[in-house]
Image 1 (cartoon, rainbow, N blue to C red):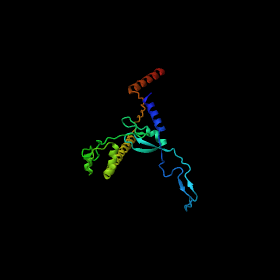
Image 2 (image 1 turned 135 degrees about the horizontal axis):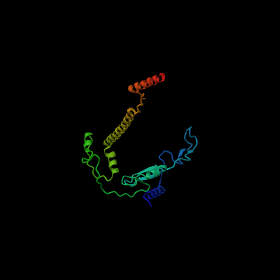
Image 3 (image 1 turned 120 degrees about the vertical axis):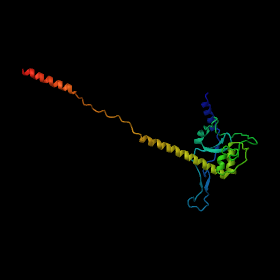
Image 4 (image 1 turned 90 degrees about the vertical axis):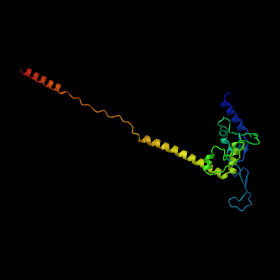
Length: 219
């Protein structure tokens, strides 16, 4: 059995074991919208949500951090098929039994020994001594909660960098199209018709022969 077949079977098993989640909307099936007692001209009688046209939502978990989220059943197979660079699956429908160490060794992004500390100094961002975070999720949450302003600044910096990169790609594409339009298309030069010329010596020789024939006929 190939790896691809095993992965497909695993995904199908996870789909079967998925637990139903509440709809993200504000309405739920059998939810009472009006009891009939309210003075509401739009809903003068008791009104209940009868049916909901949705594929439904299920819970999914990050296989590393255990972070829980919900996804539509139509997207479940696609979500379960996502992989990390090391080949492991990103999501699972089974709540992972993750036991974290009492303390980790990941540093806050603003740590003095961080790889981008020189850049952060130019941006005027503070220094944080936190160096016992357990996973990337905790690093992100730590930044969002403890360094909200710095996190927002870095996010703006990242988005601006992505925007500039996108503009550069578009600019290169436009320049490439312009260059192709400006490059002249080679056209074969028309072949000039060469008029056949008869050398003067040959012309004189033909004239002498013609005179000689006339003289012979006259004699």
